[in-house]
Amino acid sequence: MRRNFVQIAALFLSVLLLVLGSGTASAAPAGTGERIIRVGLHYGTGAIEGVNLLNEEGSGFRFGYYDSSNRFVELGVASQTAISVVETVNVYYGTYDGYQSYHTAAASSIAVGEYHLELPGTYLSFAEAQAEASAYPGGFAAYIGGVYYARVGNYTTRDGAVAAQASLAAQGVYSELRGTSGFGVNVVATGTNAILFQYDDLGSGTGLGVEPIQTGAEKCTTWSKGCLYNGGFRFERINGGKLTVVNIVGLEDYVKGVVANEMDNSWPTEALKAQAVAARSYALSLGSKHAAHHFDICFDTDCQAYYGREKAGANSDAAVDQTAGQVCLYNGKVAQTFYYSSNGGASESVSIAWESNQSLYPYLVGVVDPYEASLNLDNSWTRTFSSSELISKLFSGYSVSPPLVSASISSYSPTGNPKTVTFTDSAGKNYSVSTYRMIKNLGLRSYRYGFAGDGGFRTMPTNPSGSVSINGSVPVDSLSGLYAMDGSGNLTPINGGVYVITDSGTSLLDQGGGQNQGQGANQWASSATAVNGSITFAGRGWGHNIGMSQFGAKAMAEQGHTYQQILQFYYTGIMVGYM
Image 1 (cartoon, rainbow, N blue to C red):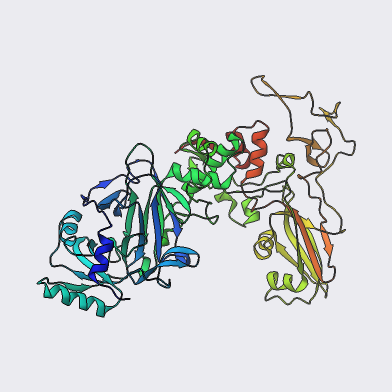
Image 2 (image 1 turned 90 degrees about the vertical axis):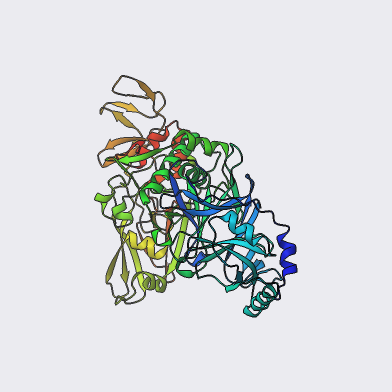
């Protein structure tokens, strides 16, 4: 791609730079002083060649890096409200893979080249380096390995850079041909090839920090890839690769982003508050889960769904503000508060669902959930597998005599979820599989399942009379008019979620007095015979069934429970407090 100084100058003159930058540090982001969390937006196989930033609020950007305490150290400032951060390789502005930014493979006449000319000497500040560079078309300040330099132009070929070097020499200006290391990053004015700042940490791992300039009391927000973010950003080429992009954001702003994406803004306040505390606790309990990529937590459901301010509303924001700093604590430590969409009638202990050490998570104990049923959720599902699929997914390496002819749930957990499933092959040999491996290998939607068919149904214990008795003598056919008394003598109307002791154990009492045979019960076959060589599973719920059901929290809030009560129901033995 041919370049000359006239073309670069025309672009550069349209770019107004504020030649500031003192190299001083401030609390990140933008002086909030609150606890900071580093959220990975693009990393690993999702690392990116170029990404655009656009001020929603603020008046340009400042460049620098984040120190080990997540404080922003400012190196330079530009007034452009639309910038792009790109690798220091030949990149072209255009649309590639559905995203308009800078790419190595985009077809475009707008190129940011990897070759530059460096003027003699070093400088003490961005202002000094920029003042020298701005005397030449296409000049820019560069910060390489902790030292400021003045550089000129960008060229996609070495020959183009050498020709420009000769042109400068003819004017009596000496320059050196330069590139960057595999860790270099350019900041350019979006849609142009005008470099605003160049940064290369030479592999030290600091990366380039970018923050919007704060001009008023309102928190700055920045658009990136269709999402609006608070805080700042760090761009790093780990091991010389593409850009790892991290949002450096205050914990409470992060939680606002999570709550808005994990629950609907219209849900009851107490449910949103429960979600806020659970999200905050979960984030803090993870520490730096993604330390290998130099951030704490990722943006998707592998950690928690986070897309900045997208979907945020007044209700979800208020729920976070009203619980600011609150977490779930167990024995004084932050609990790892897993949550999911719905459980179909019961959560599950982590030792069964994931075969984890239960003593490490004493608060993640399965509970029968009477609340989801009141929502009449459409969360039932079926999955059909052929015998060959089941053998491939569950018994690879086993000497199974195909086909599998039947399956049965051979043991249940205390909450009524399957614990072990046993399959029988054509030779009559049995193979037992833990429910953890069933979910992991087959991808079943929840741990609340059985079989579709007529192999015999298993339900929760029932009371044939349809009524219960208080203290063995007073018959009760309805919850209407019943009250519970606490230790202080206070009376509370009973409106659901009541368990009774029967000859066969505990049973959930429904609104009419009879035992609940709805969502709280396993109403699927406990065994199945293969039909046309296939076995069909049926169940309810969506998720891993560990910890809090989000729809259960909604139902509890609608029935008048507080967020503390919701959290203490789903996380056994926790307290809600502050760290």
